[in-house]
Image (cartoon, rainbow, N blue to C red; front, side):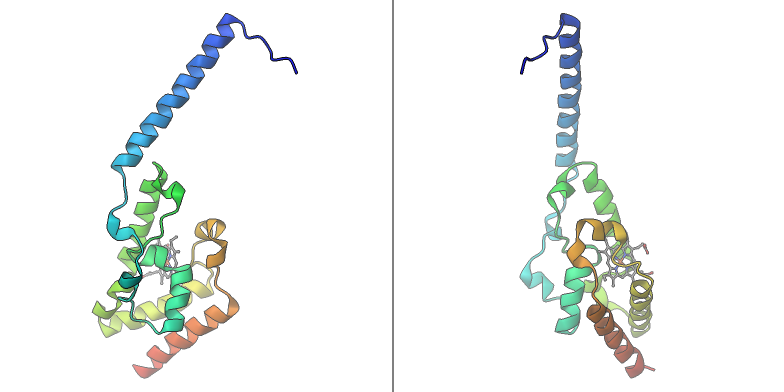
Length: 162
Ligand code: HEC
């Protein structure tokens, strides 16, 4: 194959494009450095022992919810790249402001019961885990058995505290 020979004008044009791309890559790298995740976001086994749910429920939450609803986010590689970092951090913060599983024991009983109801409502409506998350984490999809386990768990705490 013969390579096309670029005219001087085309070469300058191409170099300009390359420089712009390099510039953008540099700005992104710099911005990524300044939007790093705090180390507390890194999942550790000991940290998970803070979670107070029965083992089978913990397993489901771990598979499908903990990345957002605990501080122990498993950050994907692309999650370290600006501006994805900012988007994910914001999303995870919002999720934890609504419901942080690590804080469950600090909730009042009333709040626990309300959250248990909301969990069932959200999974019944197929709103959690969010669709955008499932796209990149297909394994996080709740199975039929997962949903029925969660329902049993929620009903149990609701019935016990009627
Ligand atoms: C990709 C991040 C992400 C994952 C994974 C995720 N959530 Fe969420 N969740 C959010 C965000 C963000 C909100 C708050 C905004 C909203 O309601 O959409 C939220 C809100 C909720 C709420 C509403 C809380 C309230 O007080 O209204 C419940 C309940 C909930 N999630 C349960 C779950 C459960 C259960 C799972 C796992 C099966 C899960 N979430 C997985 C991000 C996530």
